Length: 396
Ligand SMILES: Cc1cc2nc3c(=O)[nH]c(=O)nc-3n(C[C@H](O)[C@H](O)[C@H](O)COP(=O)(O)OP(=O)(O)OC[C@H]3O[C@@H](n4cnc5c(N)ncnc54)[C@H](O)[C@@H]3O)c2cc1C
Image (cartoon, rainbow, N blue to C red; front, side):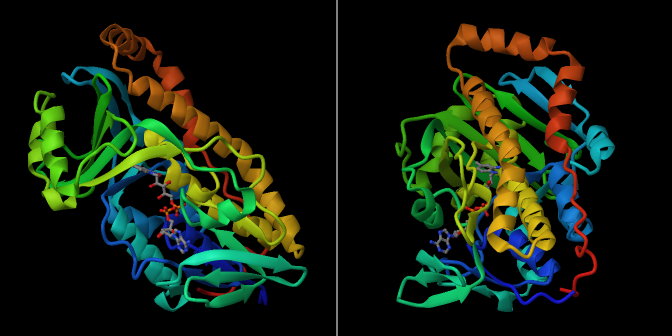
């Protein structure tokens, strides 16, 4: 089916690129505008849960994404001393709900999405500064006075979204009270066996580890800290050494194996769920719509789900504003719940009080496996909508 409709996507992150692919899938003409001079090359790993793999399957990308990473069979929550508090067979559970649990290198995932879309559909050095809309279309304005016009505009411009600011004007995101570091390191299977991911909990700090491939692992670490308090990039390794030197193996060795220049640090933010994400021909997607703390590893997964549901809604209706509102309604309940759960989980995981941490450890250890599995299942399931013209669209 041919489709004359055009779309502007602001932001070439995982959300924006997946949205552009999904919109092309239903035959729309799409261009992504990114403020950076090229695709983000820096970046650590990313866990993709079965729900994201199912959403990628709707775009015929699941097998290629699976080739980028390594599947996880078991995920553990550990104490900082290394005692296993909970072990979940996420591989088996994921397959039951339709997809594996995966860890990939984020720059490689971005590269795959951008190449599949085609670099000619992405314009770099385009910083969106605002938009106006009328009955016949929407006009995006960019720094340096460029303007572009299309039938609709998707704000996939991340947690500090300019499009959200113009739509909702709801202030700054909320600081979660802790900061996070991420890195990749070359670490062998003797330190990090394939198929086993873990997250270790201390007092106001955590450390997580996933294997990306036979050579590389992805790790992330957190620590309670005042907003903006952390030092220069050159100080990260030293700070991590101080925080994690006495944690259980393989944590100190993984920190030491990481090149200092490759460590990223971000303060962690989210927002209260908003009661609306759009207006007329404009909507939001990914972190611009529902920024969440990374505690459930779902931010990018939800952006990928958004992209598929957005395209399915647009495929079903010729009334663009109505299709955008239908997408928002379809997505809000699930993402609101995940934002709240991630915040709750993160608060508990960042507890500092030693007694509270002992009680937390006992509670996690005693949580029945079926309860933990039910929580996993709720996140892992994603029903892929089959729009009438979804597969009948023109080739990418
Ligand atoms: C420590 C940490 C660990 C995480 N781990 C995971 C995980 O394991 N699994 C998971 O699913 N999620 C994880 N997340 C969350 C995930 O990173 C985000 O949810 C996801 O990247 C959001 O994608 P996005 O495309 O919506 O936004 P972004 O990735 O932020 O992309 C937005 C893009 O828009 C561009 N942009 C911004 N403003 C403008 C503008 N005005 N004009 C043009 N372009 C603009 C930016 O340059 C950027 O390229 C983690 C997050 C953190 C902080």
